[in-house]
Length: 174
Image (cartoon, rainbow, N blue to C red; front, side):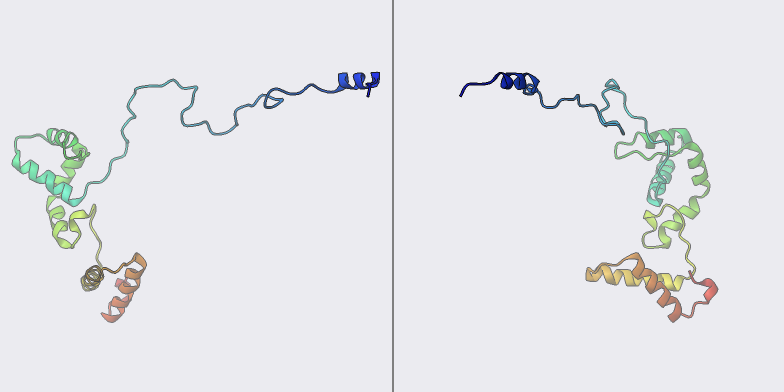
């Protein structure tokens, strides 16, 4: 069938077939920049250390005391530097903290033996009733011997029950 001139005119009006994916330019999404931001050049700088310090445990301080006793000629700054560069793992504290902890040495050593987990503590535990504390320690040991799981909520309820059974006055209860 022969084509009309009108078909040729319609063909000129039709758009051409697209060869690209989309008729528009894809732009970057607006919002948070990606982690490997291309606008920043690569660097070999090491990230700065944290500005805050972690508190040392009682066992860490006992280690510091033992080192000081073994090396009486070391200044406090030398002791601080030694523990910063320790191969087993750095213990970070300042000279002022060391001076304060040396004054508190008896309290720290007492804390280590006061409770079953005294070596892992970072600060003193407040115990309002030693009887309730002993009962809770026995309860926890029973759970661990049986291989049972316990939660903080369970221990809080048990503490309340022990306080009632031991007739602890209301003003002394937690």
